[in-house]
View 1 (cartoon, helix red, strand yellow):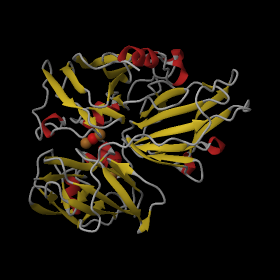
View 2 (spheres, protein in one colour; view 1 turned 90 degrees about the vertical axis):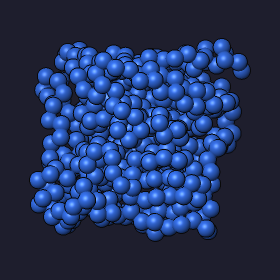
View 3 (cartoon, helix red, strand yellow; view 1 turned 120 degrees about the vertical axis):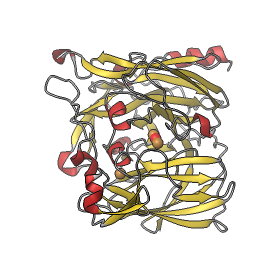
Length: 466
Ligand code: C2O
Ligand code: CU
């Protein structure tokens, strides 16, 4: 298939609720303008919501490239405050990682910055600011970045769902209580309105018998999603962008912490007629119906019924588990957490003093402040590591490492029953996980909780690869 055919194929893809996604191909510099605007999130009865958006769209445009392409995006800042763009999950050169002060100066209002880097891995990624993250993402700045495999994966149709949640006032305006201490010390800024691709979900039409690829992205500040696909029995074909040996969660549930992605393969049964409602029940007391799937039309199967093909592997370095050096990172703090003290800017402070300084969380006993700090770990370039993450808190934390992908080996000491490559791993309260990676990308990389209010109140550190 040549590029033209490829683009024509892409142009018919529709997202949830028939929202056409703007598509983009490489070979040309793309402009992304971050600016205040409006968007109708919750339907005509409520009018528009004042948001911050990329190119006037919520979510931002879907950026679509092919593996090996070079992304070139000029970001223009028309916001009333500094920003950056972080390309979440992409293994890129340090200077392009979009972390203010650490990898680049912040893009000041009225200024531009051009990001340019090759895309080594295929998969489902996303982009978002890394400055004042709680507010900038909470007001709407984020978008999906897709890197296509060299050969199209055989499905009838592809859907992209960027899940997000918003904290809205009764008039549909965004509540501006960013930096709220209760959010910071508890579960983060959980919203009261969940959207798919920036709209209250309407029914999504599926066709009996079709094979679908569903690209899921959790773009929420703090909400964890647990989607119950029930008898639709999805196959997981990629985690955080990276292909894995296809596996089926036994209860049909897909769990996604903030920032995490899953590529699912869904075989719609050929004889289904009855609508099916997807429930999110991560918070059992607050389970709700996310979206209803309806089944219409005749069978539209164009690909083979056979086994679930594995996506071609990305060129990830395989960690040498036997000779890997071991480390541990301990997560402490938060409400009901029992943290007594932690270092802040080199000084040991009591919990009371930390709270006064707006710091609620620590990694290995250090509460972060800003994006500049001494490294939590220093890793030798190209060496293998096994890192045990210990969540000694009462809250879930999706822990994200920049610049690398890692393998998740164990949870609570038990080996995983399936393959998982990730850039973010969700640790539930009191859980541990063991990850392994090759530190093959030089630089000072952020390692932080992707509950943005936790990140901003201390749960952040640097992993140095040198
Ligand atoms: Cu999604 Cu440090 O980022
Ligand atoms: Cu957290």
